Length: 156
Image 1 (cartoon, rainbow, N blue to C red):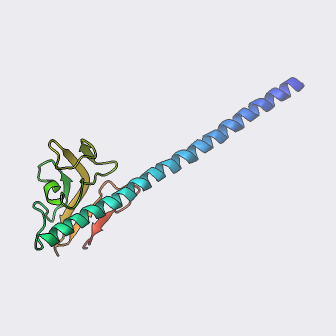
Image 2 (tube, one colour):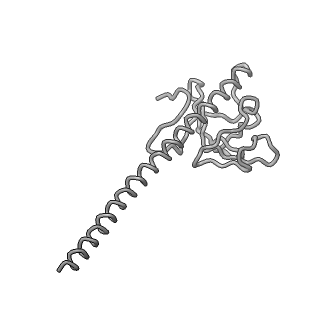
């Protein structure tokens, strides 16, 4: 009898240990995912503010005019020339050492290189537009956890 009781106790301990390990992994995984998303969103806040400030410095130094290509339609800040994109590299180079890149949705080749470098390609992952009252808005459309990340004045 004692042999079967100790065998049962060992199986019980193994089952309890597996359940506790499973719960720990669930808690660890969900907190890690939220922490990564929060960290990425914090970087996005820094990036959109840097882009917004650079555009406003450009505007101040150019008698109120904005860099070419900024319209009332949101455009991706990118080196790709298309209707849905605007390349702000040359215009913002005096104000930014590099174009900020979204930590998840952006791409820069080669990475961390100045956008003025020969052969540099980038897609910042951020959009820019101008409102009806001529206010600049820079947004992070890839923001996670339902965050609404932007710099500038959004009009209704």
